[in-house]
Structure formats: structure tokens, C-alpha cells
Length: 59
Image (cartoon, rainbow, N blue to C red; front, side, top):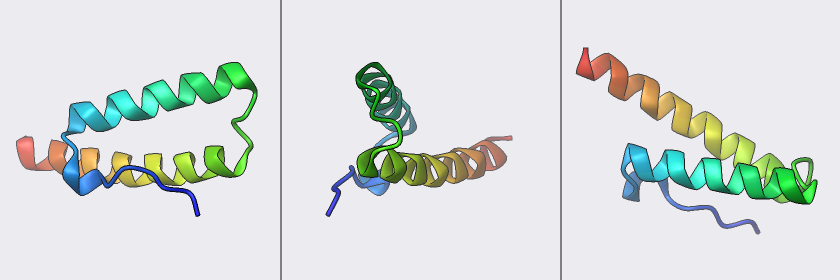
């Protein structure tokens, strides 16, 4: 089972940093279509939903 960080335990900045770092690493390694890469994409979708909600609450 693939273990990604719990978004609830991260700040928005930490989540963005984690995703960006992992995406760049997988891209360099040519592993974006791996099982981990696909799980990371799903994690990103959850992060984006959270960021959108935060943005709505901020404005």
C-alpha cells in the first residue's frame, strides 16, 4: 500500500511543497505513470479541493 502524508496534518504550504518535490522527482525518474505517481495525482486532487475551500473561506 502506498503511504502519502496526511493532508490534515500539513499546512497548505507544506502540502504544495511536498507535491511539487515528489512530482519533480518522479518526472526526472520517468515514473509519473507508476502506481505511486497515480496515487500522488489522487492526493493532489484532494489537496486542490482543500486549497479551493481555503481560498473561498479567505475571500
